[in-house]
Image (tube, rainbow, N blue to C red):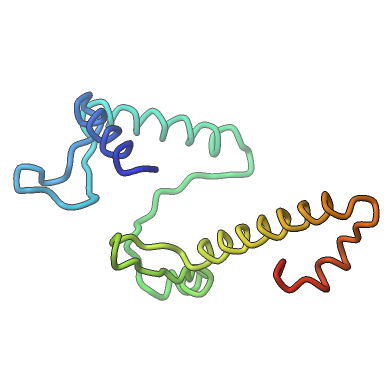
Length: 143
């Protein structure tokens, strides 16, 4: 999402009482927002709909409301500590953080698109005698 679109969405949400920057009168906290009157209602409606759809309409599911802050052993025992490890890469120029696995997947997708484009060009050039496997194995420029 471009920076301009994001700013317009935030401006609209503030204008119509959905969100306000937290501690705004004291210059605010970056990326921290409080719900305004409409935002609180919207959040409550979504929460009620989700609760009904996921808990009340299913016989084999019960709802609980537990604390987020728990003893570290609880998080380890539940698998959250070992299972959720998303290495992040910081871009010092843009001050943004990216998940390493997403960057790798995106890069691989670009390479695969380039390979497909090269194979397509070769197929047009060689016509019926085109052998995709031979092109991929003998043309290092494609890979």
